[in-house]
Length: 167
Image (cartoon, rainbow, N blue to C red; front, top):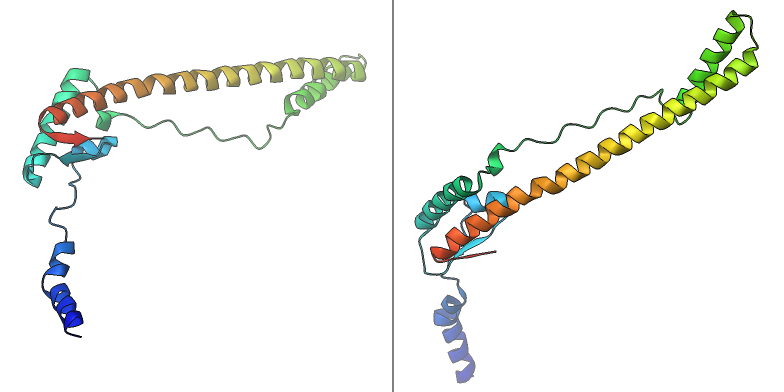
C-alpha cells in the first residue's frame, strides 16, 4: 500500500511534468508557402526563424529570378458546346450538302454523302487541333515545375546554412 502511495505521489508531482513538451510547435513562415518544412537546429527563436525565412526567401527570388507568389493560375477550361456531339460536324455537312445539291438541281443523296465526308474531315481536323493543344499544355506544365524546384533548392540551401533543418 505504501508503495502504491509513492507511485501516485510521484506521478502527481513530477511524472506529469516530464511528459509535457518543452519545444514550441514549428513556425509557419514563408517557406511553408512553397511546401517546405523548416525546423530550428540551434534553438533559434520563432522571431529569428521568421526573419531568416524572409531573408532567404528574398535571396532565392533574386538568385533564381522566380517568384512563387507572382505566378498566374491556369486558364479555365473552355465550356463544351452542348450541340457539339461526336457526329455533329458530319451531320451538319450532310445537311448542307443535301440542301446545296437539291437547290442546284443535283442529287440530294449524293450531296449529303459528299457533305458528310467533308464534315467528317472537318471534325477530324478539329480533334487533331485539340489533341495538339492538350500536348502543348502538358509540355508547358512540365517546364513550369523547374523554376519552382530551383527556387526551393535555393531557399533550402540558405536556411540550411543558417542552422535549420529543411524538408
